[in-house]
Image (cartoon, rainbow, N blue to C red; front, side, top):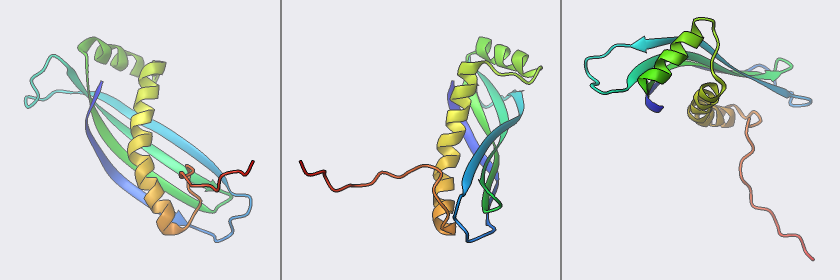
Length: 137
């Protein structure tokens, strides 16, 4: 499985409050569609599938919200493509495929989210690396 394209259709970030006490972060990734893409541009033994997604970071209670919507294109073995499309008919995904797909979305959208969190001065959804003073023994 290879990532062939990744596009954001919507990027929204809003800070509703300055109170940072007891803020909890809820994250949600939703896949709204998975479809095979027929293309005369790519001539390969692999098949292409297009996936529409949303990724939301919701800071509660009513503190901030970051919302991404987009689509991506994956190149996959034809058999895997058939299996994914068959599973998707019942809105299911095989676990290994789902984990790989979610990791792609997290990697691409997570970087943008960090920048937006920094700009809005809200807590980061992932801790950043930091230097610390060594413990004295």
